[in-house]
Image (cartoon, rainbow, N blue to C red; front, side, top):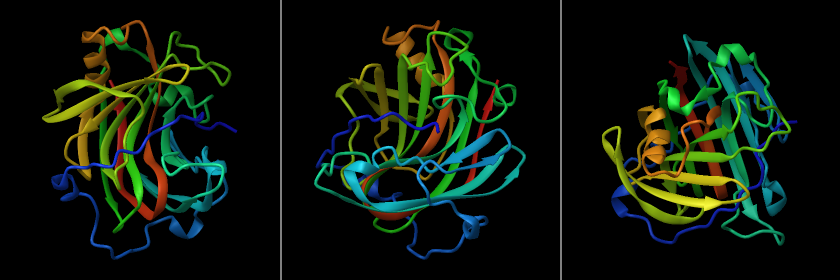
Amino acid sequence: MQHRRPRLSKTTKTLVAAASALAVGAGVTVAQAGESSKKCTAFDTITRGKYYVNDNLWGQDKGTGSQCVWAGGLSGSALTWGTSWSWTTNSKGKDSDVKSYASTVLGWHWGWKTDKAATGLPIRVGDRKKATAKWNFTLGADPGTMNVAYDLWLHAKNTADWQDQPTDEVMVWLNRQGGAGPLGTRYGSVSLDGTMWDVYQGDIGWKVYSFVRRTNTTSATLNLDDFTQALVRRKLLSDDKYVSGIEAGSEVFHGSGRLDTTAYSVDIG
């Protein structure tokens, strides 16, 4: 069972009003392809080509609720998938604790589940290979306190397996709701791929860097190498590290909602 290791997050209580403009869909729920065969057990997975969808409920002991994932088909390298959730905080947790990170995984996630060669990973940061990530999604109305984000895992070697703890983690937040905030403290800001991002840094036994988009979006095309290079330029990340895994999904703190991905792809090189 591969799953995301626990990571503390905090909730900020302020959120720029303009960020809500692209936050949520129309509130009319239409069943997605594959939803009829959804998986609702913790760490259930659905494999589609080089990706797998993971019902990652790593913080479920801090909450009461449930979450499901489903996946449609592939069109080229583009995947259709989704997740729905309902979480409240129990006596063991806080509203600022992440309860789940249902996500699509490419490459390493505490081990390898799909064919390693097909993923194009790992890639050495200093080799400057493009990692073109495209994501189009919708959020149901009032999805609670949560974010929609990429999560990159890095190691000091290109042979990482299930037992190897990462050295660094890089998150790229595209959308946040309900006052959700990243781990750590604000380091500064940077302009990447045509928009402004606030950069946070924290430590949970490995370094965690979060790029938080200043305005919410539900559609993005990014070169994820731009984000690791931004850290290299600031001497926060060494270019001899390897990006072993790339995830994308919804971190849920509490509330009820759903994320529908109409097209998701990551292509290396």
